Structures are given as structure tokens and as C-alpha cells.
Amino acid sequence: MLNLKFFIGLLAISLLAFIGCQQSDTINNPIDNSNTSLLKGGATTANGWYEEEEIYYIDQGVEQGVTERGDNQIYLIGGNRLYQANVVLFLPGESGYSPHWNVNVVHTVAGVTVSDILASPYASSHYNSDGVLFDDVADIMGAQQANLITIDHPGVVVNCPIVSEKAADAPGNTPLPEDFQSFDPNVGF
Image 1 (cartoon, rainbow, N blue to C red):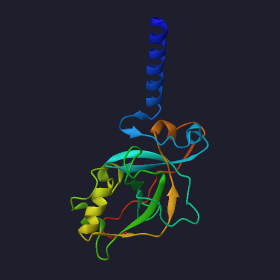
Image 2 (image 1 turned 30 degrees about the vertical axis):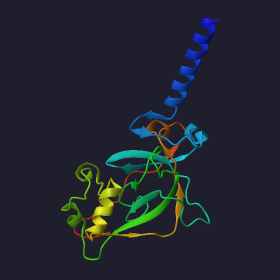
Image 3 (image 1 turned 135 degrees about the vertical axis):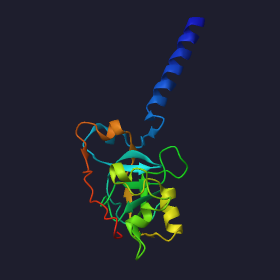
Image 4 (image 1 turned 120 degrees about the vertical axis):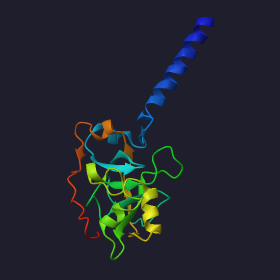
């Protein structure tokens, strides 16, 4: 009887460890397992930014008939993937996360140039290497408070569950291009 209890306990621990491992590929790159069929290929994937780190998501497009949903926000710098990958507010596991993102479009204030943003404390350290102007929502909010940018709220919600890089690169998935238009430092966007 003791061996049976030991075996059941070992089986339960193994099962819990297996389930825990399914929640993310790494601690730093959690995934949204709300629809695991998306992780098997056949999806459109995109890279993005969260707190100075590159993240990945499944791009399921615009939700029809929905103008706002929850607290989750995604920021499009100058337009959808026009100058750089989009910046997100939350990751799975954080309060406020949902795969449904309220869209926000970021533009410079009239008369402000990209050079003005680069001279501020809000520009990404990835600008010189990757052409990324913003990689953190806190910096976007700071730039808005400093009157460097405006944020438009077009009343659009997109469904984009976060996934691991491994899931984004799964065979059969189609990554969106990462060849963005370059910022001109002498003008706004």
C-alpha cells in the first residue's frame, strides 16, 4: 500500500510539473495557451516589444463590431508595423492581460522630430541596432507627457495572443515581414 501511495504521489508531482512546463518556454517569455491549436502552425505571427524585450504573437486580425475591450493595449508607432514592431502593455500572467488588444496609434506632435525623441530619455536603446524608437509602454507614456507624441484611439480591437518565439517559428506559421520603413530623424511621423 505504501508503494502505491508513493507511486500516486510521484505521478501527481510529475503531472503538475508537466502542466507547469506547458505554461511557457521560459520564465521571460510566457505564452497564452487559450487556444493551443494556434501553436501547431498555419497562423500569421508577428514580433513586438514589451519592456525592452522582443516578444511574439499570433495575429488574428481585427475583431469586428468591437470598439474597446478590457485594459490591454497595443501601440502602433506611426501605423501598423510601419516603422517598427508594435509595443504591448501586458504579457500573459499579468493582471490586465488578454489576447484582445485595444489599438493605439502613436504620432509625433506637430513640429517634433524623431531626433527630438532620440534626445529624450524615452527612446529605445535598440534604435541604433534595430531601428526601434519605442520598446516599452512606460516610455511611450513618458513621451506623451513630455508633449513629444500624441496617441490616437481609433476604436479598434485586435486579437493577438502572445506566444513563445518557438511557437511563432513553428513550421507552417507565416511570420509578418520585419523590414520596416526607416525613421527620418529630421521629421516627425
